[in-house]
Length: 355
Ligand code: B12
Image 1 (cartoon, helix red, strand yellow):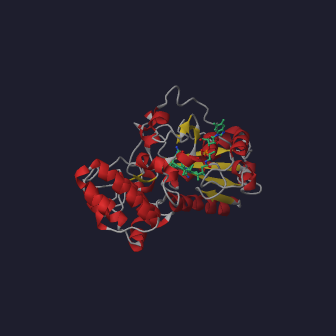
Image 2 (tube, protein in one colour):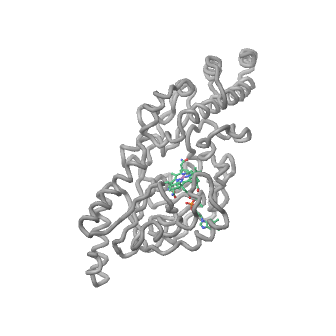
Image 3 (tube, helix red, strand yellow):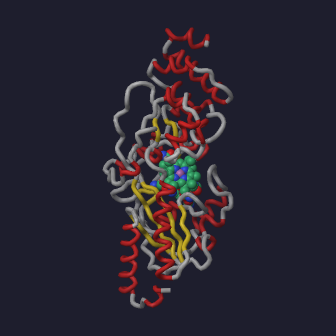
């Protein structure tokens, strides 16, 4: 391997900085390197806690880079900012997508960029590498912290100086030996508890998230939204940004660095709820397929739109609900929404309860 020819620490540093520059050039905002030792604290924690929803169930590989690639020498962690300011919310009954799924899907985009680096190293250094963006075992946040990219905050998100927590993470594990960076070990949240207090379902305790009660999970799960969380869902259609919106580290974070994550024309940041409840499968394909809000299919979004209608302060929401007959899971959510609106707009109560 090319790296083994490099002898002095200074030379190793120079090679590392050259490689870092190349990876940044491939289309990332931050790059950090760490060794392939097991994350012991996280391994013990996961063993006690078990797997949560949407997490891999095979626990040992999550913290062990050697299991991702035999002969792995280095874990390369990358971050890419997706922050764009909230556009003004148009009038009428509207929902809200969280920032991470308003633009193009980060998975494909980041994997493509990481693969360019992996292919390049394969040709130049004859080394194998594997790439991950939510797509495999790695526990991405703790590895990114160990590679010096930033610190995990009380809201459990990785917070990077000047970028805040509005970043996607990815990992490339490689046979190439690269000098590790120092882990980020500064303190980050102090006594602040804005995120803990702002969460409408109170699913955060310091540095720990109860996923089953996180709106970002509830609006992505199948079947019904538990009754006790429907009001808390407010207008969130997919994901939730509340614990990041209130974070002081995010008030001055870099913005609009990458046009690929700016809200698309459709569905946009605030989808029209009328359009969403009537959305055909073809329209779903057209509007949501390019984004990261597509993976649960159209029915979850229609259901969430009904909950958002029930939480709407706009009287037009009543007309949208009266226009259509809903079936299955949707029918029950439509009934709930009608009851909510009947309380909010008592002069429409009879119409709503008759329908
Ligand atoms: C499953 C998952 C979810 C689940 C569960 C989230 C969670 N907090 O675990 C749900 C659907 C709820 C979710 C929501 C979101 N997600 Co998500 N998610 C994942 C995924 C696929 C796995 C995460 C996982 O394994 N969690 C399990 C817990 C145990 O691990 P962890 O939080 O990563 O690490 C913690 C533990 O190790 C813990 N820990 C370790 N030792 C110890 C010891 C003690 C005593 C304690 C208390 C804790 C502790 O501290 C770590 C930091 O929280 C990752 C991608 C990946 N492969 O890592 C993306 C990922 C974490 N998600 C991401 C994003 C963007 C989001 C959302 C912002 C999307 C949105 N707007 O709705 C929200 C954020 C919610 C939040 N506050 O965390 C990004 C996070 C980027 C960042 N800056 O941190 C990731 C990395 C995807 C990516 N490739 O960019 N997500």
